[in-house]
Length: 390
Ligand SMILES: Cc1cc2nc3c(=O)[nH]c(=O)nc-3n(C[C@H](O)[C@H](O)[C@H](O)COP(=O)(O)OP(=O)(O)OC[C@H]3O[C@@H](n4cnc5c(N)ncnc54)[C@H](O)[C@@H]3O)c2cc1C
Picture: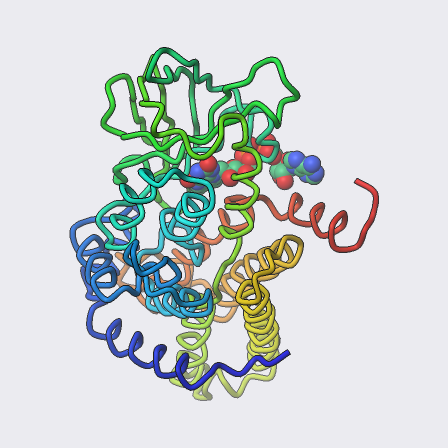
């Protein structure tokens, strides 16, 4: 196993870093921190990345990509995360590029590929993930929203919850039940739904870091049959494939936060001595540094497996548990080091690091829930990684 990036990959990363240093503007970061999804600055950045082929570098050239390996996509994702840009749920990828795109490529019709892939690659559209329902979260086989065939359409009725991107995306990557009379995981299909379709109501839900997610109600929504992804009733398998890719998380946000914390301890005096000389502070920082290095190696291994054409399952689950829990750990350690002032919000004149750690702390709670909870990830590792009984 060789973890060294090739010369071409190193040059690519340098170019991406130079570009993002310029293009991740204050406006992009503010939109990212506001928790409202993509605003005009984020869309502009998406399109600038798209114009270079860097948004979906793994897509074939004919569909707007550069036909490069996953390592290149990881590099872009990591650098965006490091700069706190396009972050909806920290560190996880974009739904269009990282989840829907690969499934469309493998299973979509030629018409669907031509219609959606270039727009995803150019950053013109994004899809909202439409899996979770009030009674179907960890166990997606319980999906109940119904899609019934009617001539050239499906008619969809039911409810989704925690569908984060629906208020700013153009399309819903929707899982719905098409087969009510077969074993539950066999009767699910995936659709691409125009979120402006009549009969869709999107209602906001706010999580504890002030990020907007949504409840979405479908009331007899007509979706053309050409928007069914792949084969009817095969959605469970497509979802499983896509979730393995969603769980590919980067540690860019952790690394950036850690650097800021270390710099803070060097520049801040306590009783006339820099915090960085306090043995307890040093130990806490070193513990995090050790885990960041482990995280980086886990991530590089998963990307390496993907480049070899292997779909990592338990390896990605292991990576997700480790990195998401590391995000939470650094936020707790950060608050301990900053002391009580660290808990103050940005708008307080007494806040430190502009309230960064307080917001980071609240924003990391969702990480061990979204994309599959840590308990469920541990079940996957136990069953598929260790061969323990289910
Ligand atoms: C802010 C936010 C944004 C989200 N965005 C999206 C989105 O855009 N699209 C989308 O589709 N979903 C989204 N989700 C949903 C997310 O994926 C689910 O919340 C998650 O999968 C857990 O499902 P649940 O909430 O129904 O909890 P449940 O599945 O009801 O789980 C409740 C608890 O039981 C535990 N549990 C469940 N089953 C097992 C088991 N077999 N073994 C051990 N423990 C178990 C869980 O770990 C959890 O602690 C989002 C969630 C949040 C909070």
